[in-house]
Length: 109
Image (cartoon, rainbow, N blue to C red):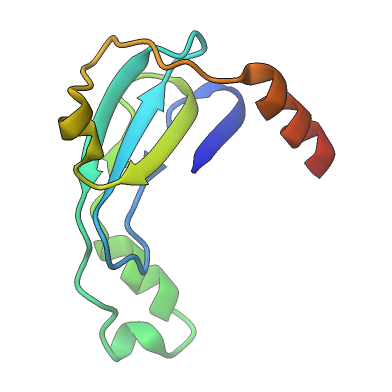
């Protein structure tokens, strides 16, 4: 999954109701890797987090946050462990088809 933000800003992701590891990469405006993580599944929602008016807030509050270390424009999520297999490192350039991403974004507006 690729997230394209209108402008570079700090972003933070969590593992909300996800049961498999996910690698997340944060990219700057020029598509260089700022930082990345392997996000691990969180314990399932408790019964208190599954009901009531404040249940979602309680669940969200306990989730580990995975923040960008600098403003980012693009965030990519892939299968957990794949970044290690690929030998990805901070500062690497990620090639993206920006024309296609922009066209897809325009189609959603």
